[in-house]
Image (cartoon, rainbow, N blue to C red):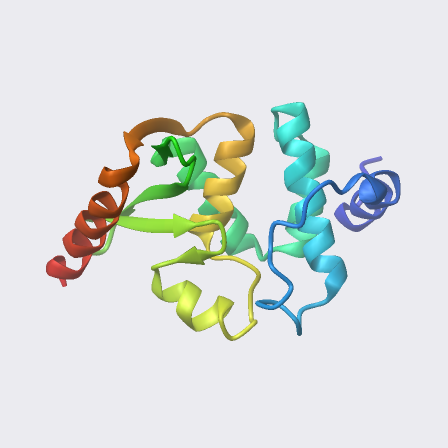
Length: 175
């Protein structure tokens, strides 16, 4: 008999909650969300990074914390290989460039994602109003990065701000 996602999630968290190593989401941004949600997601992302795989147990646990639509959207981005981590050297500043293909508009859009920011409308409407922890671009970028699946592009520090400007200008000029 298969275990329910809630039971799997509870077992996983009882076993692993003490292993949280870093706080990915700043508390000042998500003060009103349950603290456990932040800890749970951070621990799950940390487990993905340690194991370099996304197993059924972690997927079940993520499905309890994130909406199915959010999780499926993030996993689709990971599977499509449309996430690139751009790292500036020597400062090691980084961002994620997430390419999203809109079936309705038949157009490609590039989203700029920092650790706790995305330029998509979902971030502005749902994340900043505390209806969701993430948009699919941030969750996809974090999963992809922790799995070692995102492509890496290294640029020099002076080019980093130019790259950000070009990426944001490209998106705003399309509209």
